Length: 233
Image 1 (cartoon, rainbow, N blue to C red):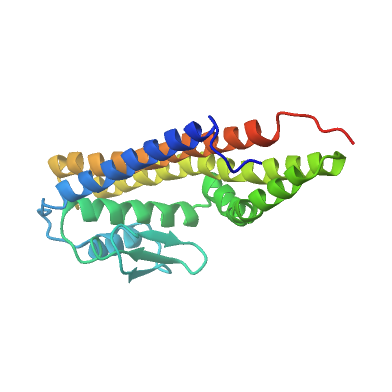
Image 2: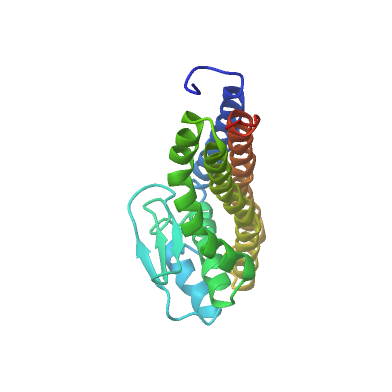
C-alpha cells in the first residue's frame, strides 16, 4: 500500500539533490586543487607518516587502497588507507585529505569522545538500516496492536541512521581542524597552500553536513508514512 507515488517522495528527492550537490562540490574542489603541487613535494603518504610521527603515533600503518577519494582511517586494525588520488600524489589537495585521515587517527589515540560514540553506533546503525524497512512493511500489512509495535520499532531502528549522521559532524570537523593545525605546525604546507587545502576540507565537510538533513528527511518520510495513524484491533 506504500509503493505508489505520494507527496512524501519529495522529501527523498530533496535529500538526494542536497547530497548530489554536496558530492559534486567535493569532487570539483578536490580536482581543482589537485592541480597545485605542494612546494614541499611531499606525497600524501609521506605527509601522513610525518604527521603521525609528530603526534607520537607509531602503531598506525599507512596503506594504499584503490579508487578515488576512498580514503579512510580504520580504528579496528589501526590502518590509514589512502586512495589512488591521494597516496602518491603531491598536490595540496592530496596532502589535505591525508592529513584529515591522520586527524581521525589522532582522535582515536586521544580517545576523542565523539569518535568513540560514533564507533559504538556504527553496528547499531547498520543493523537498524538493514531491518527497519522489512519490519515497517510487515507492520503495515496487519491491523492490530502488534503491527503498531512493529512500526514503532522500525521507526526507532531507522532513527539510528540519523543519529549516526549527527554524531559524524563533530568528528569530521574536528579531524579537519587537527589536520590544518598539524600541517601548519610541521611546515608541510605554506600559508597560501593551507588556504587551498582549507577549501578542499570545507567542501568535504559540506558533504557530511548534507548527509544529516538527507537522513532526517528520510526519517520524516518514514514517520509520515507509517506513524501517523492509530490502528484498531
